[in-house]
Structure formats: structure tokens, C-alpha cells
Length: 103
Image (cartoon, rainbow, N blue to C red):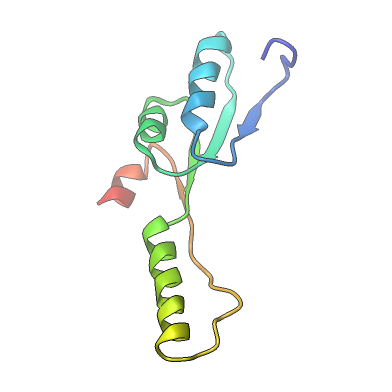
């Protein structure tokens, strides 16, 4: 943060966005840095609601798990060819829409 005072955004490619949010919150001295990350874990949710995290990408883990188990069923039980690609929707969460997503 000290070396790049023009930093305007950070993309965290895993669920540890909250750790970066904590650092940004304590080291930006009033300047806004847009923070985007993955996964609606409890610590990320807290920082999303408070403001240091601007966007979270939710990958619908329950749907991904279901699709994986279903492919296993299709292959082992039904003896079908496993699909090459499974499309799963993602959601972009903000502090304004996260309550809707959780209900």
C-alpha cells in the first residue's frame, strides 16, 4: 500500500478476501481501494457488510457439490458418459443484495 499510492483495486482469487480487507481498512488512510473476492464465508460477509469488501463472487458451492455427485451417479450407476462441461451460475454480491441472496 505504501509502495503504490495509485492502487485503486485488488482482486483476491480465494476465500481469504477478509485478510486483505483487514489490511486495506487499516492502511489506506481514508483512500478508497475497491476490493473484489470469492466466497461468502463468515469473515468475508462481515467485511462486505461493513464496507471494506465491495464485491464477493459466490460460486454456489452447494450446486457444484450436487452436480459433481450427480455426475458420479450417472457414470457409476447409469453407465453414462460424463459431461465435459457443467455450467454453474455465479452471483456477484454487494452489501445491498447479500441479504436477498442468503434468504
